Amino acid sequence: MSPAKKRARSYDPAKTRAAVLAQLGNAREAVGGLSAEQLALPTRLGAWTVRDLVAHIGMAVTAVPRSLDRPAPPRQSVTVEQWPFATAANASAIDEFTRGLTDRHPDLDAYLADVDASLRTLLDAHPGSRLLETNAGALPLDDYLVTRAVELVVHTDDLNAAVPGLDVPYDRRALAAATRLLADALAVKAPGGSTEVRVPPYAVVQCVEGPRHTRGTPPNVVETDPLTWIRLATGRVGWKDALAEAKVSASGERADIGALLPLMS
Image 1 (cartoon, rainbow, N blue to C red):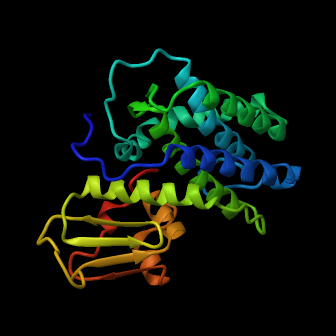
Image 2 (cartoon, one colour):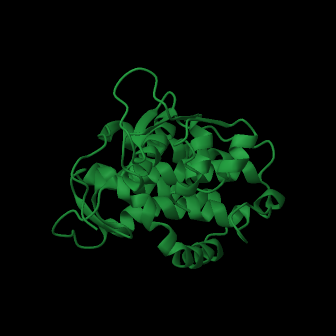
Image 3 (cartoon, rainbow, N blue to C red):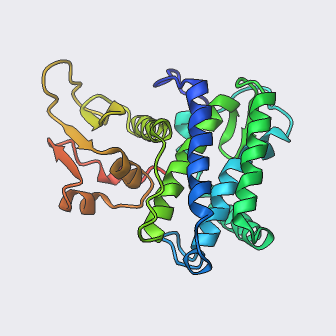
């Protein structure tokens, strides 16, 4: 897989790093207050319990040091917008690795504290241009951190869905990065200019083949909020269900993007 010819957008490295650390901190604070009964609750992620989910949140962050431990690849081979499409192929390995982490780290609060400290040290020691060999391909560290923001936001949402009343907050910068990356991934999957997908206040993309809109009100418009968009893009919510619940609006004959979703799972 080779990088796309044109980057959809750039991300501020300082904001991305701050977003990852802040969202990890939000998860840490919440996990520290969970009871054994809450940690044993089921999640919407198959057979995973909340304990497994928390272990996976740590795993998503420790992917950075694991990648840094490997030799730097000679060149970038994918763009950050292509990363979502590689996640499904690794589902089995991720499940196995996560369950191993659950067994090895009974004290999840201490585990996430170690993850946080290790990440901070590594980010201070490595430039953002350093290439990493990831499961999706070779990416610069700064771009890979954008994907970590996506993982943390998505799994924070999973955590909130699993534990009634938990309400872990979403760092605004992390939520923005997740929204934008998944919107840009849609534009990569279905290139074109006939449909405008709006996720205010963070993202607007043109996608789907057909007559290109140039001015005035677009004939085909999809609009939703950031969390609903992230849930649609990751398969947490189905397109038809979101429409039925008025979580998303779609107008125009090319506005039905249900067949393009989810983008990652």
